[in-house]
Every structure is written in structure tokens, then in C-alpha cells.
Image (cartoon, rainbow, N blue to C red; front, side, top):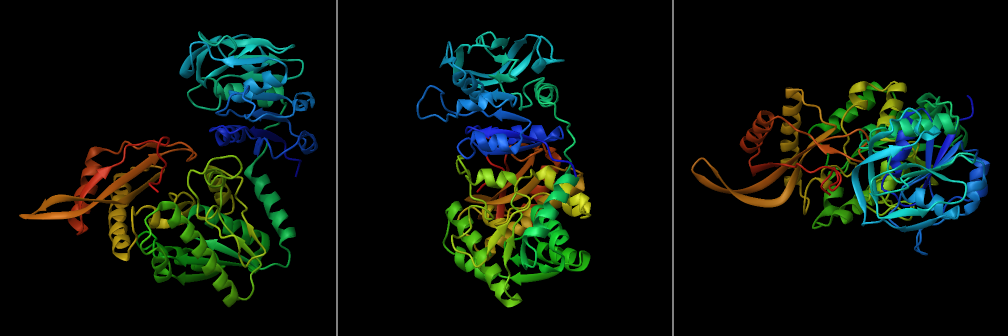
Length: 511
């Protein structure tokens, strides 16, 4: 296998760091994100990166407390593309001046006028870009020239073509920028001279070889939820360590209707891996009794999962390592590095500080959801499993608002099953769809009697990467049937509402 070419996404706190990396990978070039304060110029040089992208960020470069970097990076001979804050930082490090934007901030779709250059090869002179900034490059550094402008931003892009240093004030990684894909391709292939031949086969081969060596002679326990991520992680690790892998499926009583039996059937009968099912509903519900705060729920579930795995490890004989299906968005949303904590994922932020394992193995932690699915298909997992919608490790715990009880879990299971059945019957296929049992009760009328029952919220979103998502426009007649069935068939529910909020500002899950 040839050496994998890499692009470094140097993160300065931008909200689109993962999206930038994803866009690079979509072009067959591997990208990895490093926080600006976790890698030195010497390390960057030693890694042999083909190019560097500076991300955006919420700070002002001229604020002494803002993220800065060693200006030596501009002299490494590695092509650089600065985006938004990264554009301003490039100018600042090269000797330019940054000032507040004239007339205040510039936000949203903006007409961009470009000059001919390598970065804008094939891009029309006038196009639409997406701006989001309150500062501007007011004085260019020596050796740079302006290559794009808007009506209110005189330096919307700049270049020092001799040193292959570029900066854009707008965001080429978002779909709102009309020719953003072309601009990134120009940087990757025209400026960085990338081959664009990184494939999932390379990832699988490299990962299997790495763990075959590092886990030689070790016994490995895989935390299997039956979801896409943990299933792919299990298949990947089975290829690496063979029969030294045991998959433990913890049924915490918070799964979807009939899901525990389905998971057991698939893995015990279909894949020939060592499979253990632990029925731990009482154990989890006892720990969650009286808990209403979402982060506490996640932390409790995360720790209890580990304790169950430890107990099973002792019964199975000492297990050395624990495998989890952590993926890239899990890591970022759990506040690793400089990212703020959006919510703790049970398989990242919920881990207790002391565990009876030599270590945690997370073979998918650099992959996006669509990349995980691709790996699963290449490993031979059935498409029905690989394409199934995501389901959070804490399960229905994060879809029951307020205290969790068995009665509430059973109620939500029935409502959720009906909603999913009706969408599947109608051929509507959102990226993710489910029911939420809210903590709101309302007055209703059934027959001639007054009722005071639960309110269920239905949620369906469409997305490519789960970093952003739009609410799905489900036909009204489908929603009508789902609502009627839920209120008729689930005794304690008398009101159904539909969530029409995108991500952002909301997250996909309610908790």
C-alpha cells in the first residue's frame, strides 16, 4: 500500500472544522484535524502533510487571548489555505493588519468577485459565497495580493502565489458557497498536487494491520449495541484479532421495540462471532431512578455500561481491551480538545476515570458516519444493518424527558414503533426518525371522557453527515395516520406534535 497523503486541518475553534475535513475526504484525500495547540511546526514538517487548512474561529486575531500560532509555519514550504479566522491569522502572522469590519459584521450569502488565479481556476468572475465575520484584513502582508472582494469586504481572498499561501474570508466548505467545492479542489489538486486516491480499502488495511500488531495475544471485548457504529467496529476488530474478540450486547431495557431479539439473532446466527447478551434492564433503571438531568443520565449510563462490561469480562476470563464504536462527531460533540461540550456521548464523555481494562480501542474515531457505512459494506455486513438509522447508545433514555421508568419506556417503545412503521409503509426515508416522550401532559377527550395524558413529539431529519441536519417534510397524510394510530393504540398518549427544528440551532436528539 502506498503512503497515504494527508491534509492537516489546523483547528482554531471553528464550528466547521469537521465539515472541512469531510469535504477534503470527499475528494479522495485523507484529512485529519489537530487543535492548534496540540501540534508543533516540527511535528507538522515530520508528518509530511501535502497541505494545511486553517479553520475559522469565533475570536479576533488582534485579541492577545485569541488562538495564535508559530509564524514559522508559513515558511515550511507547505501550501496553506486560511478560512475566515484562518485567513485573518495568515495575514497577521505574515505582517498584515486586521481591523473590525467596516459597517459591522458581514453574514450570509454574498456576491463574490474574483480575479484569475490558481485557487479560482474554473470559478466565474462573479458568484455567491457564504460570509460570517466581524473582522477584516485591512492591510495586506508583503508579498500578497487581493484575489477576491465583495461590496463590503475589500479583501475577501488573498494570495502569495510564490509561497502557495492563500486565504479566503468566506467559507468554501459550506454548500451556500456556490463554487466552494471547486475552490477546495483547486487547493487540493492544483496547489497541493494531491493524487486523490485515498480509499476506504486503505483505511481498512491500515487499521487491521495496526490492531493485529498492537493487540497481538490480547483478548478483546467489544461493546456491541447493534447499531451501525458498534457493528462495524466489531466486524473490523474481528478481522484484526479473530476469535480473541468477544462481543457483549447489553440490553439495558432502553432499546426500541423487539430490538434486543433482532440484534441477538443477527450476530449470534449470522456472523459467527462470540456473542454474549446481558439482560440488565433492572440494573440500569435502578441507577436512573429519580434522575431528570440529561447529562447525569448519560454519565450514569456510560459508567454502568463499563461496569457491566467489567463484570462480563471477569466471567469470561480477563479481557485486556474494550472496543467501542466511537466516531469523529462523537469526539467533537463531547468536547475533546478546544471544542465546547454540546452533549457527552456515552462512549466518550461518559467513561468513568477508573476502568478494569488496559485500554479503550476506538477503531472508527477518525471517520464520519457515511464513511463508517462504507467500511461496513466493504467488510461484508448486510446493507439492512449498515443503512439502518442511528440509535444512541443511551437508547430511549435520551428520548424520555424527565425521570425514566419502565412504564414510560414501554409507552415510548410502542409510539416509536408505530411512527417508524408508518414512514416505512409510506416509503418515506429520512436519515433518522423517532418519537420522544416529553414531560408535558395535556387535556384531551376520548369518547365522552376527559383525559390527561402524555404528549409525544415526532422527530425526523435529513442529513449527509449529522453535523448539520434539516427537518424532513413528511407528507401530512402520513403524519395524520401515525398520530391517529399512536393516540388510539398507546393508552396513555393523547397528543402528538411534530418537531420542525433543524440542526443547528437544535441537535438531532432532544437530550
